[in-house]
Amino acid sequence: MSTNYNPPIKDKDTKELLTIVENVEDWKEDALAQARSELVKRGYSIQQQKNRAKSKKRYQKRVNSIKAEATYSKWGLFALFIFAPFILAMKLILSTTLSGDTFLELKEDGYEKKWKQRLLVTTLVNLTWFVILYLSV
Image (cartoon, rainbow, N blue to C red; front, top):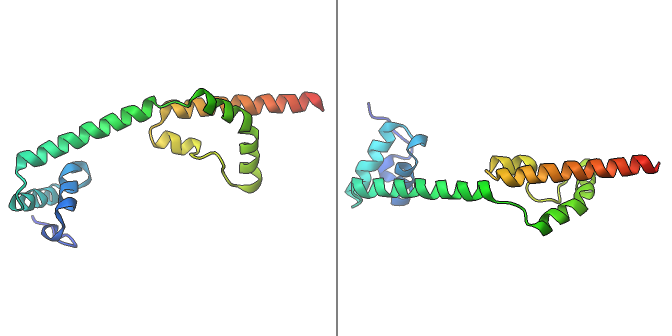
């Protein structure tokens, strides 16, 4: 059964076809078969297509590994320590963020260590400031 795509697979440019065969989990088998056969017509052998897909998977695995191991520098943690109460206040009062990526964005993007560091530092700093303010009143 051949599915009709809009625009048809054969009308897509080569870059789009290569993206299809490199991301097999995002496409139906029929679309993959059409893209592969169209790429063969355009001079990309099946082996070249498989090599590109493997290369992309290795690249993505490496990127994910780098993201998972990324950490804040000592100066970054120090700045976070100093400005955490102001970041929290801006978030609560103005509903804006001055701190770049939010906790959820860090975790969703694969920055596990950065997410844990940020969560720990901001929690400890805000609790510390709360205790200091509570005890001073």
